[in-house]
Amino acid sequence: MPLEHVHDQLRLRHPKRSFVQYRIDRPGFVTPIGHHLSTAMRYTCLIRSISSAGAVLSINKTLTLPENFYLEIHGIRDEIPCTEFKRDGEELVVRFNMFLDTDFLDLVLGRAPQDHRA
Image (tube, rainbow, N blue to C red; front, top):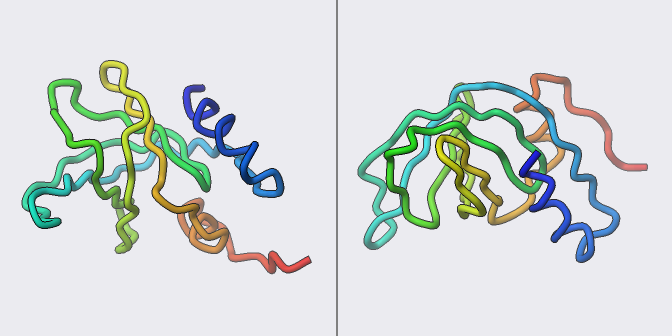
């Protein structure tokens, strides 16, 4: 999967972080960041897979996006700042501008938050 390319770059800098990729096939929205951080438009997408570092999206291949935008997962109010990593037709690989918190990732995956202190 293309998200592994994002993970390969990050593993060297963050060797203790988990970059497990989860297939979720969940609807979402992409909101481009415009002039002065305005967010006038919002486009639908399908979030194919996600990890703490990025995601693979299916989006209309004719849609032109800026390099940076927000990703919103349907049913979750938080927006995730993203940067385009690679695009091939309808498949868009994005890198999150900060790692997702493990509790937030658990919420996205629909599982109960775990105690991650070991």
